[in-house]
Image (cartoon, rainbow, N blue to C red; front, top):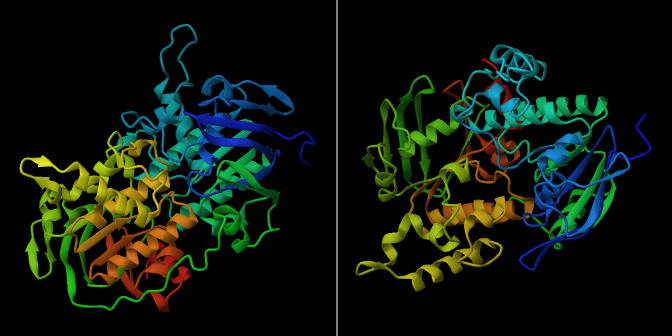
Length: 500
């Protein structure tokens, strides 16, 4: 039986930055042993509200109570001391440290209290025990910088579990996880509920929430627009509350005609990551790539692009063989890559939206020896309007945008470039349902313009809704090619997870 006093209450929280109101009198209640689903479009104020809870920001108005006691969090240490831990959407790990060192960062076991020397053997043993307990197949000694985005997410989750005693916030925890890993996470969440933790779960994947949510809080434009028990609203009603408008189709209809071969890959190998990959993508076609973490999906598209050259194999664009050795050459030949990790390998966070949008085709803006900044701003405004990037300010630094708007900037960059083949690695990671629909429309427009699209995604409904064909990978090899309209999530998972 849960405690009658909520584990967490946030009352009348308001916050402004530089005169811009981000949150206005928001109330939030999370009970022990329950999951509160917190949803809203990008920019609705979810992350700011949670950063106030985590002590990163202080509210202009309002208060926070843990187990009925009003607390003042002047920094993250205060929040942690009260048992509040957070998994951030944009990971906050130290890449030069090991998995174990990240899990116990700031709480390292010591050989003796007086000596202050870290007991690495004990730390690694404890990290291994915790990872095995929750079914995470990670080596505690591996440096985090060498892990995939999915494995880094698992490290972040593990660290938060170790820190949390009363409240744990999960901000898009499944954004880079496969369906099998999502199920493992949900089993973990049910275990944490049974231990009496209050869980706040933020996700743009609304289809995940029925499996775990007990209550629902919806934010829009910094205000609470719905607070109630899970199940009282239909999906359409949730989307209407989030967006303030109807969304008739998340996956827009496809009208592109399939043309000639634009991309041909033959015998591509980069052992031990993947071996003997071969497929074609035609003009007007969307080819999906599915597989579990470690299957080699990201590594394949990076090799095609030239970010990490393969050991052997051929890549052809429009019947012209290219040498996948340098990204700059690939861009000139009409290849583009939207990376899985937009902050580390995609965007220049300190540069303006306009600079980021035009970066891959800057030569089109050069007049004499200088870049025509007026044409750059005009081009940026076109794609800001086309993709509904918020706020619509070409001069604003990309690092100050929400995650979904950053992703739209990255897609806009390649829309502006003269691209024939688009390699999209998790194109809607961390993007809300309304923004996803806009990105899907943009992908369809690419196909309708005659481009070929290769899309890696861990979101199987996304692949089934957007792709014409789906290639399934397992342990670095292609195991089957499926027609999207004639397959199912169950069939894809079966090929991805089991020997046939």
